[in-house]
Image 1: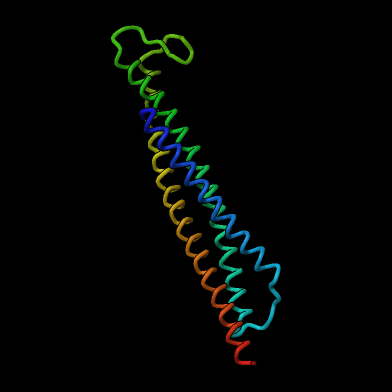
Image 2: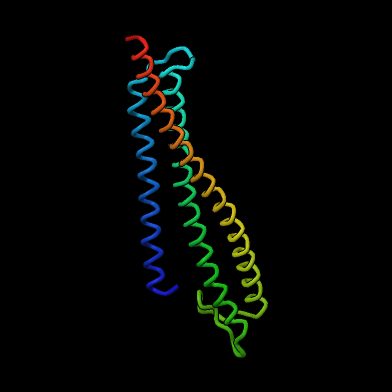
Length: 174
């Protein structure tokens, strides 16, 4: 990855993380605000029921937002380890293809072809498993994103509907 590509990736990653933190913070703030004013009541087609639905949606948004943040950390950690293993695999591949004595670059000792091939096998297996793991983590990451955003949206809708129901009830009683 060129330096320009790496810098662009870092900027995108930072922006994405800031957005994730913002959404979790927004959901938490709305949950705290609504929760501080909420008084339980009977379940019916009322403002109280819609506020309860909004609280539930905001809580789901918070939880899945946190899951997404944790998933992002796991993805970055796994990707880093995979990249390290790939770099070592590239070195081992070079060692295997050299026509003269092979030196292990980590220890500085001579390494036999069978040892180098064993390292190669282990590293290839690790890279393959890491790729599969990243695919699974990526799928969860996207799922958490969708659930978090849908729950936040439904929470907003429920909160707005609760306010309209309060207005309707007040106008009906007046």
